[in-house]
Amino acid sequence: MAIIGIDLGTTNSLACVCQEGRPVLVPNSLGETLTPSVVSVDENGEICVGAVAKERLISHPEASAASFKRYMGTNKVFTLTGNSFTPQELSSFVLRQLKEDAQRFLGEEVTEAVISVPAYFNDNQRYATKEAGKLAGIHVERLVNEPSAAALAASRISGEDEGSYLVFDFGGGTLDVSVVDYFDNIIEIVAVSGDNRLGGDDFDEIIARSFCAHHQMDYEGLDSQKRSSLLRLCEKCKQELSRQDEAELVWEAEDKKMPFNNLVLAGLGQDLFDRISQVVESALRDSARSMEEIDEIVLVGGSSKMPVVALYLQTLLKRRPRIIASPDEVVAMGVGIYAGIKERKEDVKDLVLTDICPFTLGTNVVNYADNDNPVMSAVIERNSILPCSKKAYYTNAYDYQRKIVVGIYQGESFYCNENLKLGAVEMEIMPVSKGEACLEVRFSYDLNGILEVEVMDRQLKQMKRKVLTSESVRLSEEELNRRLEELKAYKMMPCGGIRTKVVLARGERLFAQMTGARRQQVVLVMQKIQQTIVGGNDQEMRRCLKEAQEIFDRLEGL
Ligand code: ADP
Ligand code: MG
Image (tube, rainbow, N blue to C red; front, side, top):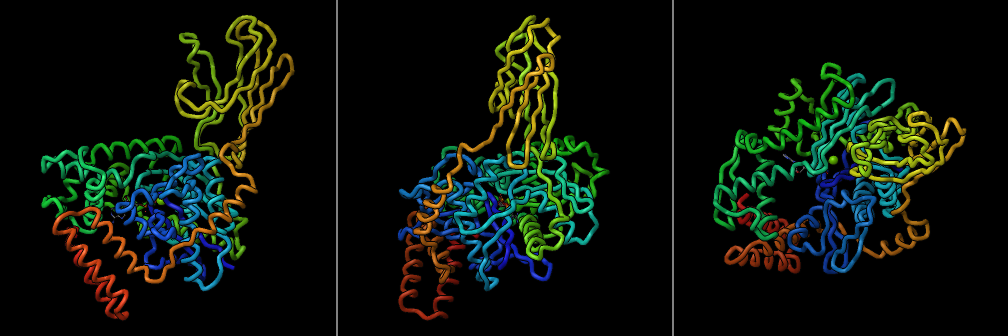
């Protein structure tokens, strides 16, 4: 039975298997390696995932959901035409689809998967990801950090030796930059930094804003249908600029166009580049490495395909990034390689992938200027390798103080109140003059996200312990099994005739987006397809779909 690797992305997901020691990406039923991480419930109550669902996101927004990875590990509920789903349930549909694609591709059953997650995912988010696997009927024994997977792919695919990597992962809505060491079979994340509100979507938006400004239109004033239509066109234009230096953005429905080129895009993106540089610099600073100590820059994520981004990085780091494979496939290849190693039970024990603590954990110290606004004192610094145990010493802030409250905070802000409070330990202490008490505070944080805090008064030789786990959003085993049964009732849309479904879904989207004569043309095309479904043979169907696509392309100005 096969083990597959899965990159469960915010925008796109991929599955990868290892064949004869080499990573092979699994094509979906459309023959594509990327499956949009979008879920939609159709009129029959069937679940569709991927390209069809992405079209329905515009034509049937109330029945569709995207970007749910952002909410993993939270209590957010998505309602799709009366059906309620948690983020992990929506993710489980994506996983189910990828699993089915892999089974069809391999011709055997898939029961186990290795899934990649962002390095900064906390314990709740990791737990939710595993739960998504369970709900999809896949055993997920191991999660792998995305930058570790990228480094593994970089080293294995290029056949180069081990080394230090700067992994630049620029996706649809997130930027993650990591410094990863790969030495002696240990893959160690040295530092991570990121901006979870910066991605390819922002480039679509700056293009849209510039287009609107050019035509004296109010971008903010566009209704949501129009805005999503325009953004899709902008994404297409942006992608064209990755292949050629110039592209024309034509918005047929509004009878407006505007030429773009990479130089213009570079100019428009100045603010975004500034934010990129902050993330890159922070990762390098935290890693305490200079660029000379980095062996490779690895480009990951669909947005890294943009020439303006690659060029900017090259100028910033004074080094040419290495493209080992299509950037949006690198993480999947890494998890695929890892799944293969695990399947062959080869050197999986030798290959160690470490986890890090992505945020700072600390306690409060007094702020004499403002008593209500204590200052954060770090105990476990962000990017510490897990498991990790650190001691820090504190004293009393006032004469003859009898009690001390050791707050437990998570975050990077100077003031505790701006960080997340996880708990507190209250202790009686020996009443002595200010500065004479001696408190030892120890934080131990393990791989399962369990934080243990010990506070000891060294004079009284008294100790207090508190164990913090993050189980608030977890389901019990029974609840999980009950939900598993319920979800089984949702049928996945069968993959037969998938091309027809994609064209029909696109037609529905265009119908929703267009008006007047264009809309009428969409109706005619759709009727033709429907007639062919009923009365046509395979060859006629293929021809009809091809024609339909061409007309739709024209209508969309592609
Ligand atoms: P995620 O990791 O967020 O799931 P991806 O790595 O697949 O997503 O990146 C998706 C983003 O990459 C989207 O914003 C998409 O527009 C962008 N993208 C994909 N291909 C290209 C391309 N050829 N040129 C520019 N941007 C691209
Ligand atoms: Mg990704």
